Length: 66
Image (cartoon, rainbow, N blue to C red; front, side):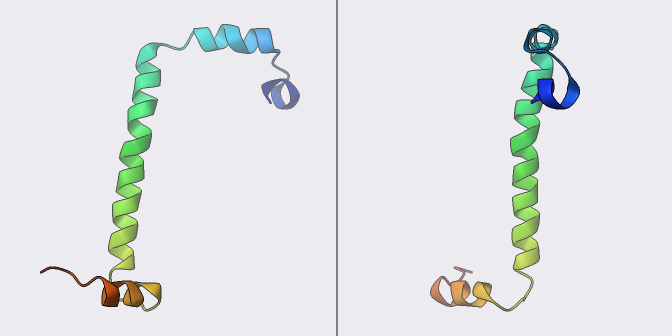
């Protein structure tokens, strides 16, 4: 993809890839699931604010315990 779109050869890509520090990889691997959880929680909260649709059917079958 980088060769076709950007004109970067595979050998140059691997050379540049080796310049990335482990710290950047760890940050990327931690940041992705954190944002996924945030997006999921916000989405569930927004979907649970009384909109009609499949949420009503779900709540009828699975009532809240409180």
